[in-house]
Image (cartoon, rainbow, N blue to C red; front, side, top):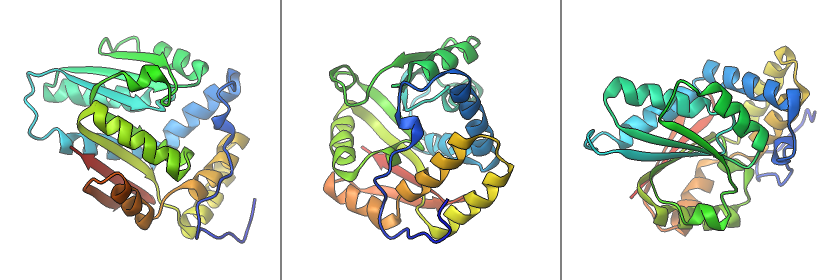
Length: 236
C-alpha cells in the first residue's frame, strides 16, 4: 500500500479482477464480500434509485430490456428485479460479464428470478454491438477502462440504447483512498484490498465525466453521492 498518494490523474494500473480467467473460491468470496461492502455503503441502492428516475415516465405495460454490464454475480439485477416487481414493471433483465465463473455463480443465485438471464460476453465484441436495450446499467465498471476505449464504447452503446445509460462509479479522491485503506483492516480478502485501492485511483473526478460527456456530445446529469460515488445519467 502507498501511504502518500496523488489522485491528480487516473492510474493505468490494472486490477486483479481484470483477469477474466480468475475463478474458484477466491472469486466467489470476492464477489460476496464486494456485494456486502456496496450494500453497506449504499451503492446498490443508488443504482436502483437512478433507474427509478429514468423510468419515471415509462409506460409500465411496455416491457423493458435492461442490461447490466460487468454484472459480476448479479446482485444489482436481483435488486432491479425486486424493484420491477414491486412497482409493476415488465422487465427482461440481462447480466453480462466476461468472467465465466461470475456468470455461473450469478445463474446459481438467481433461480427465483425468471426475468433474469446471464451471458458471458465482452462489451467490445461484435455480438454485444448488435444488441439493443432500453437501459444499460454500469455499476463500478467504467473505471476499468482508459478514456479513449470508454468514449468509443459509450458512443456505440448510446446508439443501441433507447432510454438511458445509468452509471454508478467511483470518485477519485484522496480521502476515499485513505478511507478504503482504513476499511481494509476489517476485510480478509487480499484481492478486494488491492483492487479496491486501485479502483479509487482509476475512478473519476467530475471534470473527467464532463469531458467525456462533451466528447460523446451528450447532456448528462452528474451528481455526487456518498460514499464517494458519482451518479452519471446519460439520457437519450
